[in-house]
Amino acid sequence: MVATRRSAVIAGGGIGGLATAIALARQGIEVRVCERRAEFPEEGAGIQIGPNGTRILQELGVAEFLADKVTRPETLIVHDGASGRILAQLPLGSWIAERHGAPYWTAHRRDLHQALRARAENEPGITLSVGTEVASYATEPDSISAIGAKGEVLRASLLIAADGLWSSLRREISGNAIAPKPTGKTAFRSVADARNLPSDIECNAVHIWLSPGAHAVHYPVNNGRDIAVVVIADNSGAKEGWETPAVSETVKDKVKTFAPSLRSLIESTEEWRQWSLYRMPPLARWTSGRAVLLGDAAHPMLPFLAQGAVMALEDAATLATHLATPKNRIEHALRAYEKARRPRVAKAAEAAERNGRIYHMSGPMALARNTAMKLRSPNGVMSDFDWLYGWRLE
Image 1 (cartoon, rainbow, N blue to C red):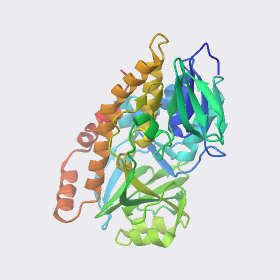
Image 2 (cartoon, rainbow, N blue to C red):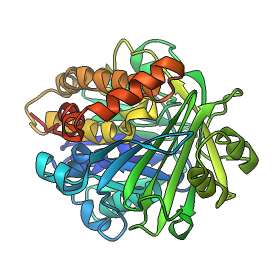
Image 3 (cartoon, rainbow, N blue to C red):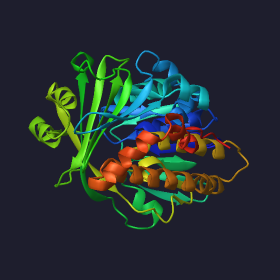
Image 4 (cartoon, helix red, strand yellow):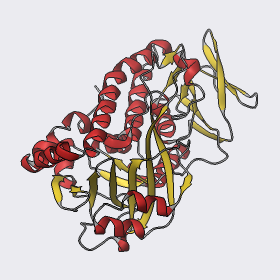
């Protein structure tokens, strides 16, 4: 690291860590990304990226690496899980792109990660290191030293912990021992060949199927060649990690009351992975001197709004903006970033929780939900999310 210019160590080479590296490098900050695993992660299945995320990817120069990988769904279709009947059909495609100035994409998470890594590798100010875990840090008067699990020391101007839900730096930075708690629900995920999509299901769409205590989501990825499928249901026995294998018969059992079309899609693929869902109360702080938390390390949220990764992209853009002015003290810039982001991520997390409750309603409440969906205009429903998709840096 060059002592005469600003530099950063980023713990975590996921979506948030790489996006932050690119954003900082474009502000002239030298960056080292430390990924604890021996290879950069490529786990996960599908990911939805709203206009608030695709706009950032375009600004960071990442979009060009995704041009032939993403899909641009035309609509979002909500089904009653048991009967399969359509409850609502909401506009995406050109409607949302024109309204918010950026498209709505669906993609394989692996493709997004590879695009971020390709852009980072093309930035001269970024060094990517694998097999390097930042375990702690020591603050000095004009710098910070990131201390590796093997004893290595990396000196820089600031340390960014983008090391995910199970952050090893969260406790040290936040000052408390808050840990994620299991929700009792599990997400089962797979990728199916698009040729296995039943003919009565619209192919270029995001589909949500609602049922008491469970729901399923699927959408095209890999430029429409594959279908990402996620089933979220009650499930005991929380497990850490994204890559835990799941038994296909378990997934089939979770959707046994769903409509035949959805069951047919789910039965077409045998390879499933699972991840347990966790929630965590807000931290007292995200910053400590020259160290700062970002993405899931700071504010994990449930996946019912499809915004977890996008919030990390917003974090990256916001942090880089606050660090862009050299005369700003780093400690002040980090606190300003936290102040700017806290209300936004709290609102998104609350909306995700609310969606989860709505998706899994039963009895009279589910009937009322279904009636309300049919009565509201599609454009009116989508305009309720202008606050989310229309976000721009102030």
